[in-house]
Image (cartoon, rainbow, N blue to C red; front, top):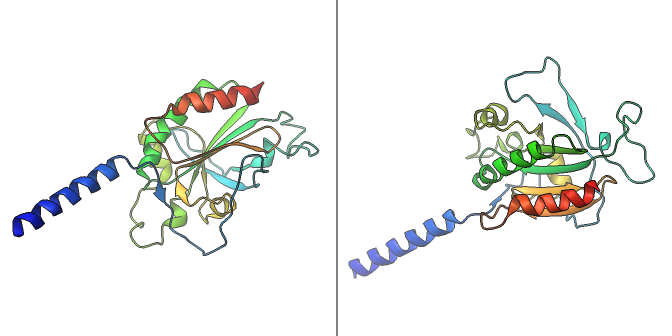
Length: 213
């Protein structure tokens, strides 16, 4: 009987390891109990204003905030800084946290695309929710995003969603969650999780190329 229980236990552990090895997304703990937002393709992307985190070797001396409406707005609207920044851009947003293992698998691919389209009218932003979950039990000791990503060689701009406002507006319940927004603030692609069996870079490149045209 003990042998049977032991075998069953070992099989269970093996199956658990297999599931963890294939993990493509992780749940985000609810931080404020607000109603869940559901965004679909064709919806207008919610606006946000978020502080950019210092990454890389150069540390900015002043705080810098990014606004979605600096880069994309509705067809009948003017860009936030239309006199100094008059060009509409495609925007790619990826929500992540340093405790999210699937996010770590996705980030190098986003870095590759960031470099590939560096001279195009497209903006890539990583939206960090690590600090938004810092007070939750079990999430206190994860590293801060800026230094953590610098060590990994990721220099995609990182925005600090420290109160989870953008997370709530975009209905992010699992990580990673990625949105591609066109030049008229319309959501054209939503990706939930990261699957190593899919050609992530090709899928995003195909969407981006169409929108840049």
